[in-house]
Image (cartoon, rainbow, N blue to C red):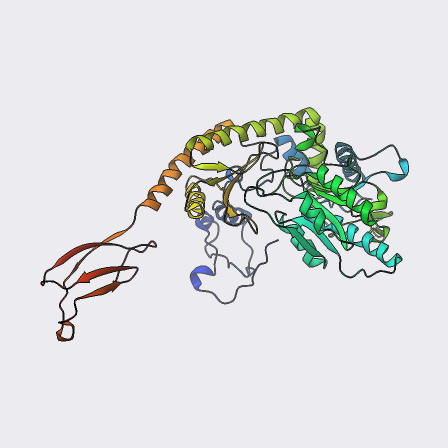
Length: 511
């Protein structure tokens, strides 16, 4: 959640909430940052909140987010029916708990969890998103590493985790909150994911795991988990360590199994011990659901699991929070049931086709370099060619806002920060018609940005220069004007009419 600041005394104009159409129900506007003294009619409360929310961006035109922004009305109805159910009340809502269990089983099998050995069955939990799932997976790795180091009577106070510099910010949160050193493999221009060779070189006896990303947030690219598994297996054999792998499949976990079934990134690789995935991304559910799956129960230390009974019955839980809604879990099960493997494959294929059309349309302009890869999640990341790429990228992002589109511009992480990228996340509700409209608006906005960059404000100055007695014998000199200079040379007195360009966007000059 965003960290909010408690407001102090304010100007009268900003201390109240404008009521607009609600004024027919209420005459006095309610305070903005203080609870109102009196109640107001429900119609007025609705209208006030509704009117303020009109200034939000349109979710379907928000191409910055991976999060699902459309679901079928039947699923919306199911979510509304379950909105008052507390997810953690397992004894009171046993069917909801059973639906979560079914989802965990389906996802584990989708990720090829081993099932032949009944003593090493996969386990998993539902979370509020991949951020919580990553925290839980990281805690399991840390605790298991500490337990082993304690048994060996070795120091256990300096755990580290190896990742690429392209990881999502939740990994940095985990490292800071739970006191784990984050060792990042730097990127380089043209290579925007973690290099498995460099990652394995950074592994030491204190490394609790190496985190690989299936679908980088910067350009949608898959990291080579299979090569990482091979190299890390060789290093473990040489050193006697058993450093494992965690796969952050927040974005790609519901893409790869349907589009690239031959790609080995999951539990088919022996060192992959846990995987997280976001149900609210390409799992096709509204924001608020993620999943953490472990290869077997032995990868999840027992001391991290809490058993509670004050709600009735024994309830084993592994979570960072407690109460939360059931709607998203129910929606996830609906999607699995409704779509099946065939449906998910069709949706992902359609997304990739839309991404292809967008990519080809951008290339036809001749202005952009495509940063994303064709094999990955349905993301199109692109950068301007030539000079002044950074200013043009941010300018285009801002210009597209005028047409309702929300497309982020950002610089790449360390060692590639000179590359500024725009990124479009292609979701199920971003079809061909919207792609073509976006390409048209990019063309219009591109002309606006280019014209603005090439036009330099001009100030026309008429300067009359007269030398005083102290300068009568000086042959030449310089007259300075802010952000410009006019060189003058002593000659016969005359009026000089000069145009002086003022740079850096200034429109006024002082002489």
